[in-house]
Image (cartoon, rainbow, N blue to C red; front, side, top):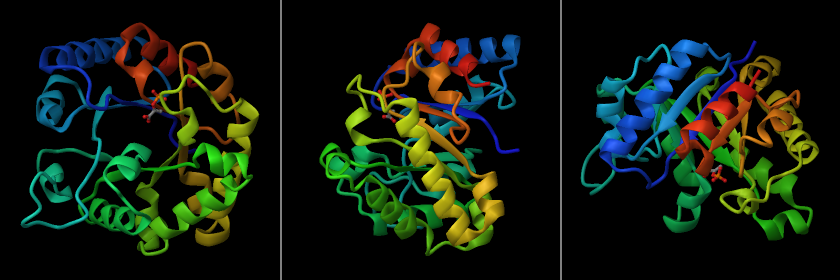
Length: 252
Ligand code: PEP
């Protein structure tokens, strides 16, 4: 059985006190309610260590929002996988569409980041997804397959047991527009088929594939009920305690 996961990508939001407050409240909620889903929060990097200490890892896992493509050295501002591993961090978002868009991350860079994650025992949450014009031109399958293959072919297949994928159509991120459950299921099933064809049935069956793109307390139930959707990567709604716990509870 693959893991059910609900991950909150806090992006560049919440100050120090707000981040601790939200994380500790979530920790208490998970302890009390024992949801099926593994809950992950991805704060800004300056709070990673504090949050690792503030929560109990049996209830909440902490993730970085990014990882360096390099091992170490003169890369000002980067944080390496080895550094993240050295503070006890187990997860990192890799290839988020905002980093592809604003930081010019290419599939080649993303493949290097995944390599670093695997080398240092970090479970990467690899984000893939098409832009609006690609969906309108009916190219979404092709785009997602290319993103997956470019990121994954260079990896040692033994490491793929650590992989988590997030399908996030760019046109649905932060826009309030959500893929319909049927649209999301269709492409999640396609991603699982690509994994099966390229890396075998075990990788396909074990890899958790999360949906991301304006998931909220109202639509989470229907989205998470789809057979190939194993949870969500949630941006805006993960900043609001009441909404986020409803989303976690919707992952059954
Ligand atoms: C995201 O940025 O990963 C995301 C899914 O954001 P939102 O839920 O706000 O669309």
